[in-house]
Structures are given as C-alpha cells and as structure tokens.
Image (cartoon, rainbow, N blue to C red):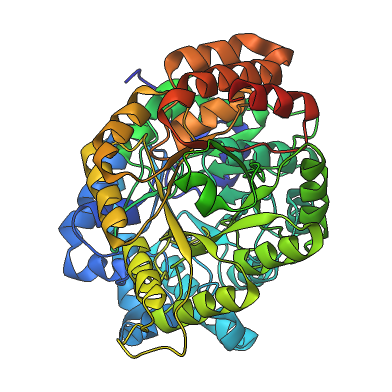
Amino acid sequence: MPSRQPLDITAQSRMELASALGERVLICDGAMGTMLHAAGNSLDRALCELNLSNSGLVSTIHESYLSAGADIILTNTFGASRLRLAGQGLAELVRDINLAGVALAVRARDGAGRHAYVAGSVAPAVTASQRRQVRRADRVAALREQIEALTEGGVDALILETFGYLEELVEAVAVAAEVSTVPIIAQATFAGDGRTLGGESPREVASVLSGLPIAMLGTNCTLGPQGVLSVVEALVPHTKLPVSAQPNAGLPRRVNSRRFEYHVDGAYFARYARRAVEAGATLVGGCCGTTPTQIQAVADGISGMRPARATTPGGPAHQDQPVTLSGPGTDLGERLAAGSFVTAALIATPVGGAADEAAARVAALSELGVEVFFVASRTSPRAQLSSIDLAFALQQRADVETIATVTTWDKTIMTLQADLLGATALGVTNLVCETGNPPLIGDYPNVDGIWEVDSVGLLELVAGLNHGVDCNGLPLAAKTSLMAGARFNPSAADLDAEIARTLAKIQAGARFLISRPVYELRSLQRVVAALSGQHVPVLACVSPLRSFEEADYLAHEVPDIAIPAEVLTAMGQAGLRAPAVGIEMAGRLLAEARPFVQGTVLAIPEVDTAGLSRLLGAVA
C-alpha cells in the first residue's frame, strides 16, 4: 500500500479532529459485524457482547482495519444500548460492554504505530420493527446511558449510524450534545428509492441536520457504492458541513437461513469511494459486507486526494426499476403444454398501494398485443399491494392473464396457505413460488426475516392443496387448480448447486421455470441441458440494459448476476446510445436463446414501443 502522510493531530485533540473531518480526506473502517459473522458468530446474537467474551477476536479485527489504512475505527458497540441488549438478557451490562469496546479500540489504535482515531458507534435505540412499541423517553434514556459510557471510555468522536428515521437521529444528536463534547458524526440510512425509512429526502436530511451541533453528516448502510454515491451527490449541495459515505458491499447473497455473503470486489468499491470524494465526501469507509480488503483498496485509491465540493445537485439514489413481463395467449398452461413459445412481460407491484399506475402500464402494453403479465413482488420497505391482489385487479380491469409471485419471507405456513386459497377464490391460478428476501432497512440485513418454509416447501404446499389436503394433511372442501412455477438463476456462482436446487423445485411440483435476468447464454444453456429430461418449460428472462452505470451496478453490487466483460465494454462505449445498444444486445440474445427455451420474460422499465417491437421481433 502506498505510504500516506500521518495526520498532524493527536488522538486526544477532539476538536482538531472535528476540523480535520472537513480539511482532509479520512478513511473509516469497514464492517465489524460482517467480520464477526465470518468468524462463526450468528448475526442474531448481541455481537457487542464479544467485547467481554471474545475480546481477542474484536481486537484482531480492529488491528486488521488499521493495517489496511483506516484513520478512524469504530468501537464494537453497535446496538450496545439497554433496550437492544435487554432482548438478549444483557441489559445490565451496558456500561461494561461499551467501556470494553472503547478500551479494545484504543489499545489497537495505540499499537498501530501511526495516528488514528476511535469513534464510538451508536445505533438507533431500537430496531425499525420495535420502534412503534417503545416510547420516545425510553429511547432517549437508552441512548444517554450508552453515550455516557462511550464518552467516559475516551472516544475521539461519536458516530450515530444507520438511522432510518430522521426524528430518531435528531433525538440522538440532542442526547450526544447534552452529555458529551466530542465531535458528532450523524449518518442516516436511505432505502433504494433515495429516501429514509421515514420518507425524508437527502435534501431534507441535510437541511435538518445542518442546523444541529454536529461536526459531519452523511450516510451509511443499506445501499451499495452506487446508491451511496447518489445520496452523497444529493446531500453535498444542501449543507456546508463535511459529508461521510459508508456503503454496504452491494447486496448480500442468502447462503442459508443463518448466513449471508457479499461479493463486491475491492477495485469496484474503491472506484466509487474515489467518486464519492470527488462529489464532496471527506470521510469514506464501509458498512455491511465490507472487510479490510475493501478498506485497503480505498486507502490505495484515494491516496493524495484533497477534499472537493460538488457544485451541482446529484440525482436520486439507485433504485430497482419496475420491469414488465408480457406474452400472447389466454391460457398459460395450455400454451406451454402445446409447445407454443410464450412471450411474457413483468410488472412490479407499485409502491404506495395504488394499482392505477400498474393498470395504465398494462393497458398500454395490451394495445401492443401483450396479454400475460407476471406480477413480481418488489423488495422495498414501502407499503405496496400484494402480488396476488394486483394480479386480481389487473385481471378485472384489463381482462389479461396474470402470473402472481408468492414469497415465503416473513410468513408462516398457515398465512401462506390462506394466501393460496385466497388466490384460488379470486381466480388467480398461475403462481411463481419464491423464497424471497426482506428489504434492507439498516442494521444487519435480513436478521429479522422469517422463513418457516422456503420456495421448495411452498411448492409442496401448492401440490398438497391441488390434491385436496392442507398443510396438516387434512382434507379440503375442494381441490385447488393452481399452476405453480419457480425461479432459477443461471448466473449463480455455484451452478451445480443451483441446478440441484432447481431439480428439487421440479420434484416439489414446479410446472414451469423462469430464469433470473440473463446477459449471456452459456450458463443458461448448461442449466437447460441439465434439466432436459424433466420436460419442464423454461422461460428466459431478458432485461435490456439502459446505461453503463446500470451494467456496472449489476456486475459488482448484485450477487449472482454475470455481466460479460464485452457487454460492460459495449455499454461503456455507447454513451448517449446506451439504451439503444442495450436493446440491440437483448434482441441478439433473445434470437440466440429462441431455439432452446420455451418462452421469454421481457423486463422493460417503461413503455418503449419501438424497443418492445424490436424485442418481440427477435422471438417471432
């Protein structure tokens, strides 16, 4: 790693640190929880308690980040407040855990042989799912107790991190300013739509926080490098305060019910850290999924950079765009059984709960000859219609055939059974069974998720209902006639495991398969060949790329999506023609896939008559 000039301030000079936050570019460390998780600790335990029971592990992680080039390390005290610890029976250890957390970080800092700083990590007093049951006074009291302990321990700064509700972040700032004189860094977390969980925009967050006694404001968690860059670009023009940026390492891949992995490489992470500095950030680091590897890449990548302030507002944070899936024919089962090629389109459930926008999109696509719509659930913390309800509404309003997505996340098997029986009563009989992922809402991702059954269990439940028995083996009043399909991912890192998993879905009752979006055909052909003896129709999902940024995001931040190097190069060279180039490449891919799949799912973000016509022509 290139040598970096030592900071010209001491760890005891807290006010000088406040000045340094805006005068030079500093590097914060990465995820503590991810590293502890990788060492075998479950994310649903109180990881901060390891300050007492496994201090050597915590110290080693601090030392790793310091060796990687971090100027600031955070204490292992995220969630170390009374209300959170009470759920683990550790409420009486608040002071001990926080003091130990500071001591471990300070000891690592002092042994690093160079200047570095210790910041006390403070999370919201309760999780997002608990906040409605907890009084404001109790939240404030819990924060005060923790912050007093961190200050007593000797932190150089306080980092209020992963606050999804501006109201709670303001509360925390008030408490910190009341009980401590150390610099305060206030970080909000934003969802994929560019707003906090409370609905505030970056401009609103910057406006409110800029009037408070803090040394820096910024963002961390939930979003990956591209999304956080967009938030930074939107924060900087609306504050004179220094700005921080600590993204996640992209999206996690669910390995099993207790384990999640991230796969953003260091070079990509560092590239966006550099862009964040160019946009005006003066503190860059990492959150969930990041490791010393990414932090060292950041240290290498921003070496020698000076603070810069952006002069124009940035756009909204990256968000998943709604996609559309369509296909001629009025009976999906009959068309697939007859060997007809099915062209489908996907439409996402609208955020906010209103079906009007979706109905208008369906009406426009229907005029182009689209008659089947695959209704996909959106991973979002916002209120939205269930896919079954939207599928029913579209069938009633537009007289089209639908395929509804049913996900098992956060539902008991009894709830899923009720949903399936309700779908039958509404006449929604085509389904795709998915395990699903909860939206990222701060803290450690997906910890609060409930998976009583996964997609295979859901397919087995459907098969039982079709045979006239419920989940307990008791007879129903009448059999259902549900046609269930499943998803598979031809870009999975472990394709053999994905094929085995897909075979299990077929054995459980999947009668058709829809791929995740594909951008190259070799892996898709391998999966189709492996499944050839099963006689289950395969529909290839194709989503035209619209920009280099989208391709770059998918390649580096979304797990198990493969974007070939030549596709990235072509999108990077396309410039303003990027949407047209994306359509051209999707059309060629569709034409080449046509001989060995039984249908396609077109993911189109908006009604593009010319583009859709070209894609339909590729499979005519």
